[in-house]
Length: 503
Image 1: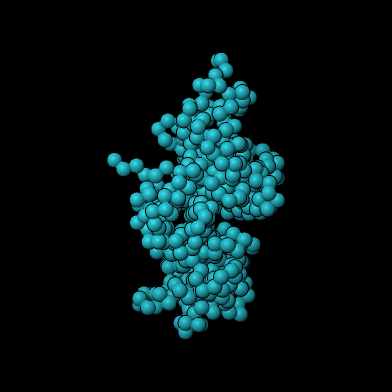
Image 2 (image 1 turned 90 degrees about the horizontal axis):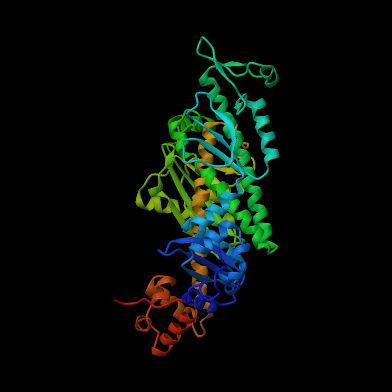
């Protein structure tokens, strides 16, 4: 194929658009000919980064997948931000929001190992795979290092008596199964003859163990990503973030597995009964509410409350909070505030309190939640905390901390509740940061003070509508005369945000 001609490789409109880009940090969104977003990227300098896609001299030095991406690009949009860290955060949020084809392909190309368990097998085995299919299997991972993962599986086989991919079980005349027909039966130390039901109980325990390993890996990745960003190693941080996204998605994936297979996590009445017994409650706690605080380096402090009923999410009752009582970062004061706001509201509306309140945190957070009830002179319902490091249950009274077995159905239910609260809080935090990043465009417009800025956003309902407003529409905002409206429209035009066209 001949090299593309420098005058025809890039449409004139795109070439002109690239020339008008600023040398500032930001995020770019590549689109195909029907307007679909096919790739999202970040840039330290937008003009330099985006122009690199359209340099004919580079056409044959690109990776084939990147070359295919370039050939698909028919248009692009950009969003300016103030710094590389903001670009990194916004890029991640937009990838999650739009799921562009080529971002997904690039992540999938890393092909880290995962562990697959197929519930349709009578004796489910733990197999290593590199692709996750949309089936009824349960997947764990991805894991970046194959050596430790293989050692983990070997440990699981000895600890729980489960089969790996090399197992060759055979059915015995009485309906039970013989797992091995060689010396391995003696090496692994478990009874070699087992019923399908007993074997699935082993699988339950091994899944709980492996999920714990996945979450340890996720935690270490998040720490490594934050450290890389703090060192301004943004490319490394972005790569780690992609792996975190993939792992988070995998850990959220198995919910359908729970509903369709006996090896799933126990839910419903059995889990609630086990939890009530472990906590010494008078009856199983049918309704549970969990609180979590989320912030990034002390900024954008928000909180979430999620509710489970009958062991399942009751999403209509989810609530999210912005901290109003003080400025700054104080998890204990934040927890006291949101717990107080929640149950003051329930009391005023005459609605019942939940059977169990769960706090994401240790004794300090639980004490803060209890303080909210005391300040309101309310009798608190049963209240516990779930501390992440050792999955320790802490109480507000003198009872010692409680550590349940990792395969305990009550603990598994608490973990699902806590993880859902954490996800919901983080999503709200990311939304606020993204909104702030978009609104930061207005900071660069001279003469726009806080009063006019607030009036502008209140009038249009958000920065996106401001960007699309005509001069006449801008003049309708209180405090905006003809000159400032025209100057703002010219400023937005220079940033590449065209006004909304009227038919």
